[in-house]
Image (cartoon, rainbow, N blue to C red):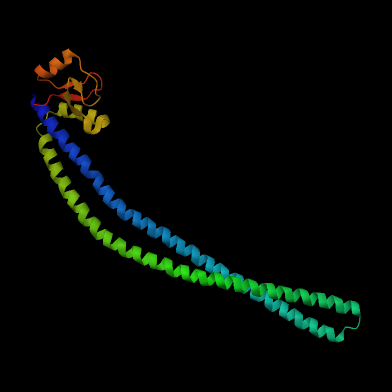
Length: 234
């Protein structure tokens, strides 16, 4: 077998190992990233709740103002009643008085409803705060775990790349460039074994002439159908 081909086969195995290891780092980091995204989402949930609580307090203040204004109006009506003589004026003041009282009753009901909402907000806020604290703790623990796991994978990758560097030095530059061109599209199936006279990359049968060349030639032969580099296992 061609020496460059032997080295290319070894190189392809090293590239496969790198392809297996590299995504592991992303997967490990994604676990932490997911927790951090959840923390940010939970923080947004808390801020939204707090904003609603602020708005509720503003609504309470607005209803308290309505109560104050209408209480003052009732006092004024009571004072007017003492000096009113005609029945028509009395009826008008009674109607005005009744409307003011209705507004006070409604405002008090609104305040009671809002205060119940605020109690729910307080309960929810405590629950969300607890979730955030738990997530913070998980994230801190995950950071340490991620550092350990990624350090281990990176150490394995370093060994792989060190081995790759040694192999690359043994391969003719033109052959290496040719391999890298195929690898751009074929990825980890750039170099494949011939099985039952078929390319194990595209699974199409190779004609007798090409098959004979692979058996006898010392050159690097590619699949006539897909372009992958072919070899026969020995």
